[in-house]
Length: 395
Length: 84
Image (tube, rainbow over all chains, first blue to last red; front, side, top):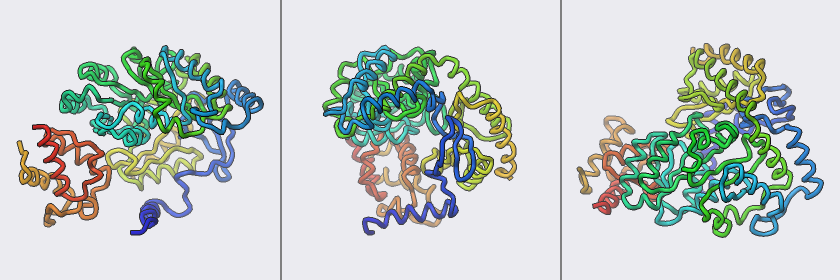
């Protein structure tokens, strides 16, 4: 097989699964009207597949901050955090995030993906073990691979399985990094954090919690699952992203371990990437204030999420195990999932389609992401559309 | 509990039967990906079953060198031997 032949295999698999002319992945968005509406093709559609949980992408405070930063600091830093890319705003955001989490230290990264890549590969190394949930995000898998540590999976949210794997490690559990997520992106379910903390204490391991999908969504001030469960001081490292509830792009890690700051000198994804743009940093700082004070936004988000989850369950759709702003419709076949995705798009609703092997257990997912700024009319319309499609999908 | 190579191989055959028809013979040289069509997700799920069977943990990294049934059996044997 030549170098390029393996990509022909990908093309063939894609062609077999997806009809010509349908751009399921990377659907072109022609115009964006608001946090919840955009133009695809010639149609005005409702966004129900973004991670814009608090709807802050058009918040006036964020727009104004970003405009001002471009005017005063330019369009980009053209350098790494390690070199000329650490502006005052980058450092200020790190202090603000550390204060937000009541932690000693914070590092800001260029993307959420890189936050996991940099943190995991900086913390763990050859001879160490990383113990990860089977449904972990790709950034966690890739960070583990980059670390050179031994990677062991435990069954998704299965604490008996985690216990068993820690026990098998013996003394090596002391040099083990356990990784879990506040809300899992595939099914929208939460990690059983109290049990994970109990196990990590029992085996003297270190715990990293990725709050990418739970930041802004859980906890009285929106910190995430650790705050929601009162376990913030029991988690060693928290990573997260700016590209969901904060409406920008970037990532972070916070911790009370003084060693966190040393990652700046050993972590390749931190050192060898240009830093976030001034506009990104400025809008994120503004969004963080809104998120912190956004109790009403969180209440509205959960109201919308519970309403849609209940409606879809009533209609007989198979869903993830608990109500969440990430609502995954689980379909047995890719064809069913594609039909539902197409049917929703024909009704001017955009959601995410996830096909095997990306979806767990060989199933396919049509994943909805609810926002606090979806109106009750929009949510009702979504419910009505799913009702219309039910008989077509499951005939 | 199986810890020698032939025992491990027999138990592996049992787990791999789910990926073949009843008439297909699995040998040590059987290629997991090309002959049994075990994709990356199926392989990770299979590994979890095997881990429970042998009460071991198999690092994902170690699977990069595993192509055949023999190589998988050998890996399990090495991990079990290191534990004892």
